[in-house]
Image (cartoon, one colour):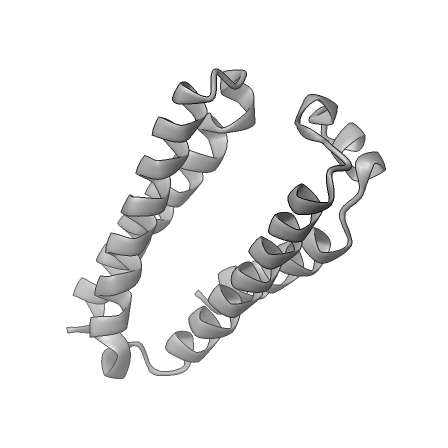
Length: 120
C-alpha cells in the first residue's frame, strides 16, 4: 500500500509539470489543449493526486486504525471510475483516453476493500 502511495505522489508531481511533450510521449496528443483552463484543471488534479498519495501513505502505517477511511476510498474510487466512464463516453473520447484510467480506479476500489477486510 505504501508503494502505491508513493506512486500516487509521483503521478501527481508529473501532472503538475505535464506539458504537450509528455502527452505526445504517451500517445495522448489528441487530449492536449493549451487552453489555460485545461492547464489549470490538470494542475489541480495533480494536487489532488498528491493528496491521495499522502493519505494512502498515512493509512499504510496503521491500516487497522484507518479501516473507515479505506471504506470511503473504495466508494470514492468507484465514483471516480464511474464518472470517468460516463464522461468519456458522453464526450465521445477515444476509449483509450479513459477506459484504462477507469479500470485502474476500479481495481483500486477492489484493493481498498480487500485491505479494509484484512485489517479487521
